[in-house]
Image 1 (cartoon, rainbow, N blue to C red):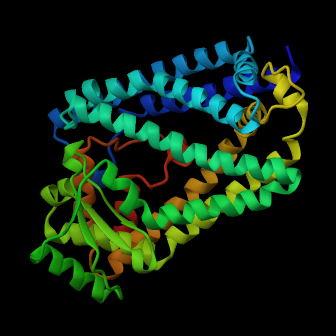
Image 2: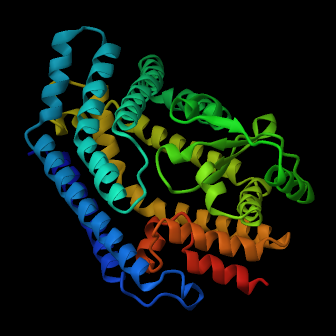
Length: 411
């Protein structure tokens, strides 16, 4: 067995072990006493329902991880990816087409493997606990659209990166970073206009008490908001959300119709005050810059290793060099870096959430933000007692108790 393949397998097993331990810790913490600030959020019947919901998700998550591990090892050890790479050579002499065929098959196989779990989650777990509103027709259409979108956009981006690599070799990472940055910025600006309509309908929030309250509150906080839209989230789920997208002239507030149904006007305004806090602190731009820097680092390191034939050989490649195999091998070898960076990135994100809560509190929306967050958590059967290690590692937001305590502490 190739030494690099052994390292890759060790990494795969280590990541499986880490995720399994975190899941086990979260399961052990399920019955931990509910924080004092959240007492009464669930009555006994709803608390038992929430515990059952967590156990169901935990069980399916464990099965999905095990299946993923078995399939990954079954592909890596016999050199299936190397065989697939050799197959593309027989089909076309174009290096670009070979790359696109390889990743097209790779993406299709990944989608097929994850599909049963997505279906079960939607039509068994979410259905059983009263969240699912998606019809099977909508599910299959959305799945197909998501898959085709991934193929088209992913294939386009991959093609540009490969052409840059083929022309520039080691210095390709500079131009590839600029292309990826343009990609990220473009979709930050136009995601709500171009992608969302493929899956949901959006319409401007009608004139009335809610719109007036939002515009008045925004004006008080120094914002002028005209693009306020309502999205038909109830088409898919009873779960509620709101988000702020774009910047400059493309700024848009999007409210789920389920959010409007579940919260009072004051609570909706408080939730949006939190989102405006993110905008005030330029968190969207900071996140975008962070993403671009991460892309640049990955591309730079890959540029140093891309021509090394050992990356291809580790996955069973027989050619002197395969860009596709090198990219897959690199992504597997570099993945442990995520275990180091994720807690750091999530820690920064949690601080941004605290700051956005403090912004809402500053303008007198703290009390309604607390009541709104409580309703949203109760309506989604969220876990009130996640294990601290899981929060540290995986949570981009503070826990509900931590957010409420921070808002009350700043009173």
